[in-house]
Length: 354
Image (tube, rainbow, N blue to C red):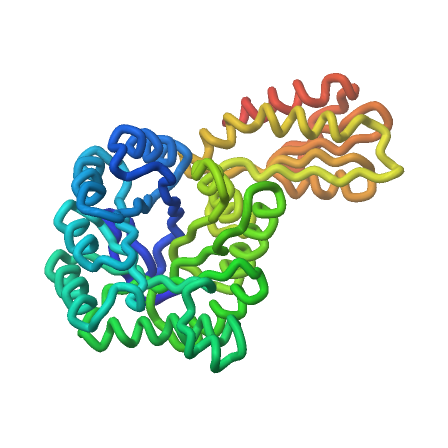
């Protein structure tokens, strides 16, 4: 993760700060109330930075109205018209996202960077697999990880040539392996904060699997200072999945870490039903603990092979046998309960710990 740090509103990016979660509104920014409602939904879900597109002056003015009410720092997404970047900054943008290649001449890019410097606003320079320069595509014989990294590094060098340093860099592909390799190549030669993501992941379960694989692997490699999961549809889903990814890889603490075994021929209770019921009832407790910054590990195990050990390694758990379960709390056996009471007894014990 980057040693350099920039601030997006009150959210630090890089420099050892926790990985922040971003999303992007899919409303028309000119629809002030609709966009504001979506931002509030994102904030409630746990989003920390929100991006809105600013295609014209009406949207820039609306952006400013929304920013005055928004609980989240707002990033202006700019393409093609450099004047919109300047207008967005004048209307309260906390960060601006540009692709220098489609902003225009050196004079136009310089105008954006000079204004950002004067306003103390960072710039996110983004490169996607769909916007790699033609000469780089020709050089590598198509869109490749090497080409993506080179394109991003060229964009960074271009911005730095104007004396601008408050940069967050991003590059994204829809291909998980290419995306991963490109990020690794980028961070070998770049000390700036990195925004990670997998672009155009898709709609349903496969999109979530691809995003989890891509982002989880990057974070475990120490890459990423801020992140967005890109899913088609309600952006709240992006935030909820991002939180789960961060928690799964250990980059975010708090809440309940729920463990249950996959079951096998040794299982003698209806473990899938028990585990599902326990996890469902733990959801509001997990949200509470996450808000409080506390963690709890809960395990529901189905047999005597791994069950007792896993339960003892958890804060609280149950190791099941034939039609019954052994409740174990912080390594100590509490009692044996019949199968039909496992869920209620386990939840009662967990509540007593909070």
